[in-house]
Image 1: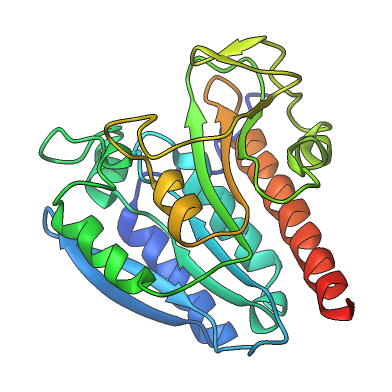
Image 2: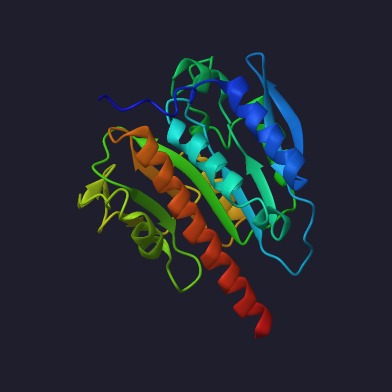
Length: 259
């Protein structure tokens, strides 16, 4: 018998937002439309403040509309961890490119790669930056996919001394193995980890991870699932990686509090 396509509404933005609204009602997340783009509301969600005794975590997904395991995986993780959302300070951007998601397109309606616009005058991104003004996060996760990938891989910007990417990949290894390539996007890679220091001059068009690393986050990761795998497995791998990263963040936060 053929397998049933379980995630058959992955490109239905209205459906995605209804699910986030339902989760917000259950968990006390505040859901806000912070911008409009091509006729769509672009949303953020924020937890009731857990205060200084809990880590602050940033999540974003769907900046490329053809990378639906990012939006689905983030929502599945949140649905499975509703109690945790009351225990940490989260800021969530569930889909940064609604037009692209609905049309299964990487770019926005004006042909822009939004993930190369974080030092440009794009109204939607400027509105997002206003939300981030003055805020710091213990962890930032930006969730993506890659059609060229041969497995799961992670970009980690080195910051604090103990690296996490290998542990995050191991958490998903039973679902999708690490990408074995030694070069990923022209960068040296090892067992699915691309790790290098960055400077503001490294790329003329900044991705989201740059502005997070330079201005807002102690640890920044970009997670990439391989688009040629099944959507169910890709979403499950995103959930596994997110879960491990959040667990590591909470553990590090508790350790720092004790010092």
